[in-house]
Image 1 (cartoon, rainbow, N blue to C red):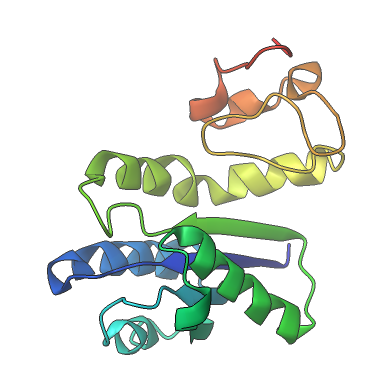
Image 2: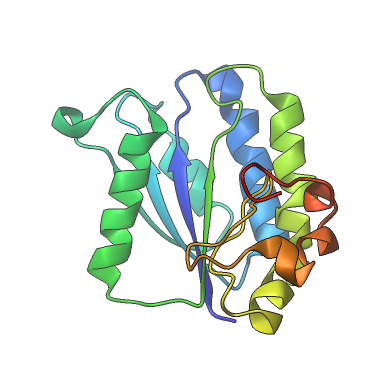
Length: 172
C-alpha cells in the first residue's frame, strides 16, 4: 500500500530532542518506504530539520509561518497538510502523528504510539485491505468509520490489541 506520514513537530527545548529522535528512529524502522510531510511549529529549536535529515527518509518539511502559529499542534498539522497538497500525490493510507512529549512529559503515551500503532503497521494496513469501507482507524479505538460503517459489525479492530475492548457510546 502506498502511504505517507503527516507529522506535526514541536520541540522547544534541546533537552526534548530525544523525543524527536525516538519518533524518527521508529519511522526509520517501520515507515522507511513512506513519504513524510512535516510541519514544524514556529518557535521550535533551530536544528530540528538537520536532525530529521540524518534519518535519510523522504521528507518534505516546512516551519509554520509566525502569523499562522496557534500555539498548538494544529498549526504544524496545517503546514504539513499544505505540503501534502502541494505535492499533488495521493496515498492509500495517511498516518498522522505528532511529538507526544515534545513539550511535556508524555513518555508513556509516546511509547503507546510506538508499540501499539507504528509497530502494528502491517496489521492496521491489512484491516484496510480486508475491509475497505472502514475509512479510518484511531489509536485509542474507533466505533464507527467516516463512511458510517460500525467496526463492531466487522469485529476486526481486535486485531490490534489496543482496540479489542473499546466501543464508545452510542455504538457499543
